[in-house]
Image (tube, rainbow, N blue to C red; front, side):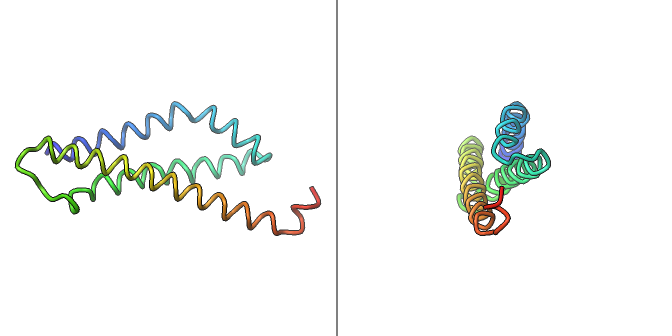
Length: 113
């Protein structure tokens, strides 16, 4: 029961931080994307990736470590899995953003702006 609670706390914590950072990050995305609907799209993609990646890694971390006799060691493993999920999610967002930026830079209409 303790590992599931810790996994839930990790995911809720990530979602809370995203909610607190929504306004400044969305303002920054509007500056970068120029168009507000593009900024909202990238915000939704990033937030979904962070929450889903964190939840997936936190919940599957038990498969790598196995159940331990001490529930706190298991909880720590789940917490580590959640942190690894955040890092993997940030890497996926970065790779996706670079790929999308390269694809848009190659289009002829991009040079006309």
